[in-house]
Length: 268
Ligand SMILES: *[C@@H]1O[C@H](CO)[C@@H](O)[C@H](O)[C@H]1NC(C)=O
Ligand SMILES: *[C@@H]1O[C@H](CO)[C@@H](O)[C@H](O)[C@H]1NC(C)=O
Image (cartoon, rainbow, N blue to C red; front, side, top):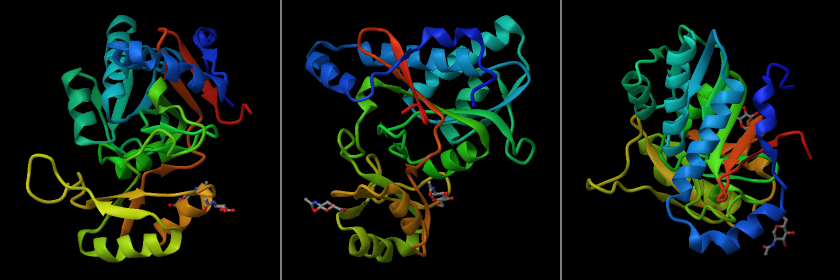
């Protein structure tokens, strides 16, 4: 499945799936700038293992991606790589431009070689919750156009099941006029509570890059994410959900001890 990987791959340690998070929790109180260091290392390794000359890349959003883009820019300069970058958000677009990388879009590059993005939480099957930053719809479109969807995260995002560490719920982008009916429909079908995300420095709701609202659905006791993924999307007014089910090929986790491990979708 990952035939094009260069030899550098051996740098990454395979994650010990369920045991690692336990160990890490005990050490958390000693962490300081470690999270940033973990994000940086995971971003660097993902770029070194998956980015090659003559590729079209999807560039995700969020704090971890900043490190990945730094690395892409350095490699483009040092190795004279020909790379085009398709952003998933306004933030990603700014990052691409600031680093003087070649900006493109899905009109010109509807097929991407690799998309690299962060995640708010990753479960043991590599299902993701994304969209804490509100860019889930474009992130999912771009990830869906990529032959390989690679995720970079730090150790705090690694969970056995969704909801274990990420407490802010599943983000759901909705057409503004539909937010109340969608809220009610989700609670009626699956329980929990969906709340309209409010802006921090403005009175009123968060408005996405697409001019829509975001609901954050705090769920209880969900195990069949495939069914939930499809059912929520079918509710009229739902634009997209932050559930990324069966999409990530590999997730790199930066660990507290400065190492990076990865987990593959089909490795267990
Ligand atoms: C959680 O859901 C499962 C099946 O979906 C059910 O069997 C179980 O009783 C539920 N547990 C709680 C605490 O609601
Ligand atoms: C999740 O839902 C989308 C539609 O929103 C669908 O295209 C995709 O196949 C679903 N994923 C799974 C694993 O069923």
